[in-house]
Amino acid sequence: MTDGELIVRKARVEDISGLVASSARLLAEDGGTRDPSINVDWPREHGAASFAAALADPTRLVLAAECDGEVVGHLVGSVTGPSDKRLVTSATLISLYVRPEHRRARAGARLAGEFLDWARREGAEHAEVTAYAANADAIRFYERNGFGAMTLTLRQSL
Image (tube, rainbow, N blue to C red; front, side, top):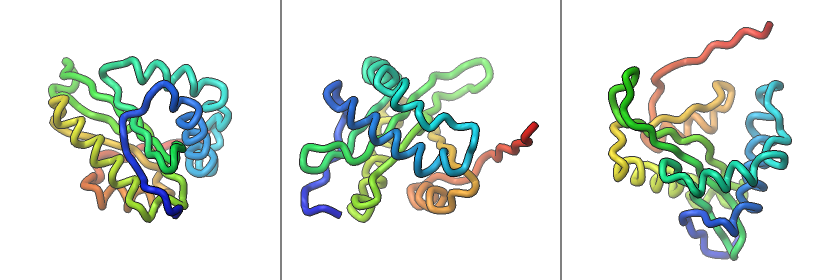
């Protein structure tokens, strides 16, 4: 961990390059090592436009974890209202990453806590997140932060 103070805050347009870099690290460390169908170049190819759209969308939350003026982590979440299929408002934690050297500062827990607080304010009755079954560290992290198993996705390569 570095000596600077870690701040968790709503992301801003000027954070987009840092958010793209954080997203690229997430895909390289997690999805890219566990799922060969993941396009690890997606953040560099589409991340800026995706983050810009998310920042402008009132149903999305984009948080930045910042240390010494640099984005060292991020969280993206969304909320969807009731529908004919799902009768409650639901919040989804889409993406969360913190650089390894900042994980001891509880940056991930702080990001998740902000997301859950936001979800409650938005009227969500539950929150959900997905993690790769092989990512035991992520599963333990989410369980420590109040999430529990609900569904299991099974895949067959064709």
